[in-house]
Image 1: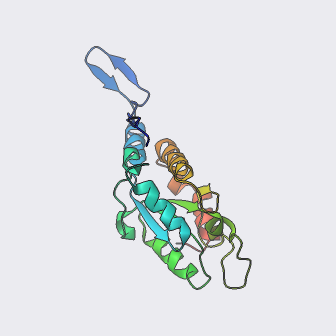
Image 2: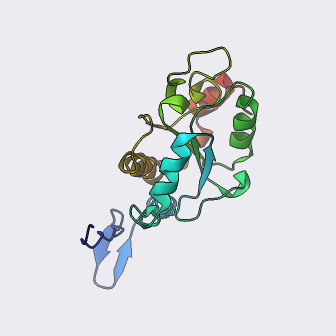
Length: 184
C-alpha cells in the first residue's frame, strides 16, 4: 500500500506587477487562471476507456486536485468534452450535437486509441477518430490509457485554457476551423 501523502497542487499567481500592498495583472491572465483550474468535464464514455476515467476520478488518482472534480452530464454546463472509447458512425451525430450545445470556450480531449483513430476496429461501422466530426485539442493515446495519461492530458488542456487569448475564439482562423467541420 502506498503511504505517501499526495502532493497538493498550488495555483501560481499570473505574471504581473507587484509592490507594497498591491498586485496588478491583466484580466486575460486572471480569467485564464480561473478557467484552467475549474474545468468541468463532460465524460462521453462508450467502452473500456470509461473505466480508466472512473479510476482517474477515484481517490487514488483524485482528478479533483486539478479542479475537475465536478463531471457535468449537461453539455450546457461543461467546457471540456472527454470522448472515451469506440464511437460508432451512428453515434457521430450525437457527439457533434453534444459539442455544439457546449458554450464557448470549449475544449475536446480524445481518450484512447478508439476515440483518437478508431483503434483496432477498422470497419465500416466505427468512426476512425473523432477529429473527423469535431476539432480535438488534446489526444490521449493508449488502449486503454492509464490514469496518469488522462491526468497529463487534462494538464495539457489546462495549459490551453490558461494561455488562450480572449480573441482566439473570434479569430478568422478559428471560425474557418469550425466551418470546416460544418459547425455554426
